[in-house]
Image (tube, rainbow, N blue to C red; front, side, top):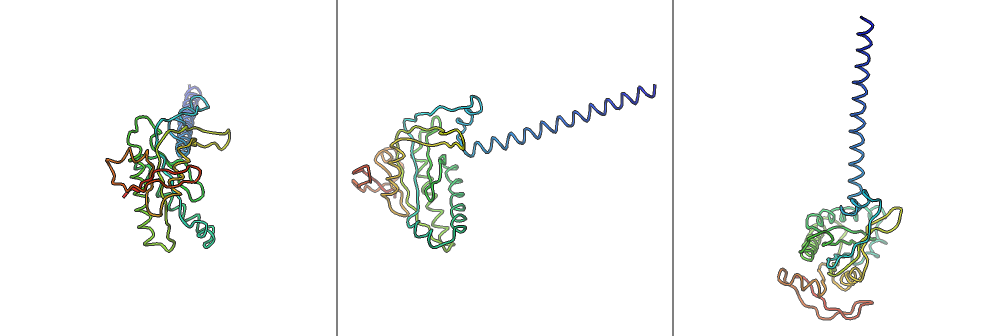
Length: 238
């Protein structure tokens, strides 16, 4: 009788121990899964992550009308030559980290950074009607942040902003270290809006102007020559 009781006790103890281990394993697995999901969502849009998890692939998608926000810093080459690499990286990390917060708050999605350029877009999700307004709002907050930051820091950053609206194709390219990217003339035109602008101002195209003319006061610049694009109508947001 004693031996049976001991056997039952040992069996129950083993079952309980195994149950605890399973619970811990499940909890650990869920924690790791969340970390993996968070990392993917930091790199890719929600719909792309969903496709990759369900099918292991994603199909490029055409968007009829989105707005692209493109920024870079005037005098960046000279600045790079005047400060250490560590200082440069720390400065950009600080600035772009705040930009990430700003675009998220404005309903804009960060696409990538290329050196000192920051690229974002709005309208990639379903039912985003105010994508042009979102990008201008984000750009205004970026410029305001830089103005405030420049008052307190030795290094002064002078940023140009270009915004253009139109169709694009979005998708993931490559099999390793893949990234979400945008393709089409709209992204090129947004870049030209930026390079044809002035530091501290938001330069927008005719197509973007038509979407926001009732929401923002704009200054018509007329036709401005843009490299590889010819003469384009441009406006400064006041």
